[in-house]
Image (cartoon, rainbow, N blue to C red; front, side, top):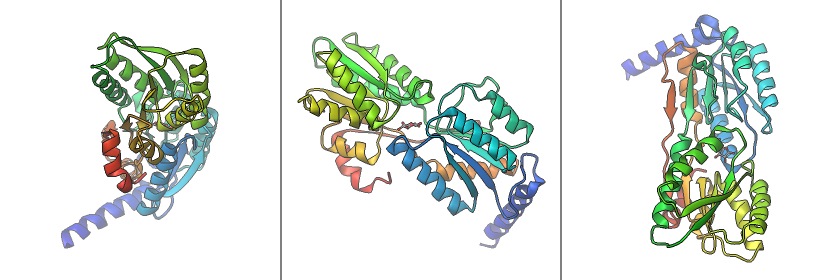
Length: 323
Ligand code: GZL
């Protein structure tokens, strides 16, 4: 016990000294701990809500002074927030880039101000990887592949063409780009599987519903919906039911996230398969921030653990799901 508390004291002292501006990477910082500026994408989906709660709860538990902003899915608002955190000389900046491109200038400003940056959830396409310390988040290509692999297996016993419509996430966002890439690579294995329409629903339920209504008007025989997140899949369910069809039966639905509402629809058979994307990144983020502010090395990439669910599996786990 003594050894553990001794190590804790050393670590805390180092951290406290660093947070007070002693470390090479520290900004101004508060006297008794880390100050973090977090620029969130928005509140567009159940996943985002769970992600925000995880970050806020974990900051409180870790004694991190969290400055939090909601960009309402606008890149210019995230950039403004990051600039305000630089002005405030926080110890560390973390954010989930709403889209992959257009970050180099503001990330260089943070680097010039000697404030380390951590990417969470989504990444950027900057060629200069020195602009951020680490990227904590899912492998979206793998998520798309899991969705496509399931469909290839599920349709193996079906003869003839299978028409797929795709509800893409936010245009230019890493999860939208990568989930599309992974899914297309997986279904290339089966020439009967064809994406006949693909359009962004911006990761929102209303967006998914509106685009699905248009798909149902334009394409007479839709067999499968592949939605880049649960919320757009839930919007598609509303449109399918309004058109007098049975979701999960007349039109199969595959989504990504596994948030409560999605898992409920899955357990009811309205969705056929959900690939999990874990939003609970808060605890890992705070651990990484403590190391980064203390000037310790951290891995360039931290991939989150996640699963996938069928309706039967959803029924088993629904009551115990954290989000
Ligand atoms: C994925 C995350 C995506 C979710 C959507 O990590 O960025 O954004 O899949 C959310 O639900 O809007």
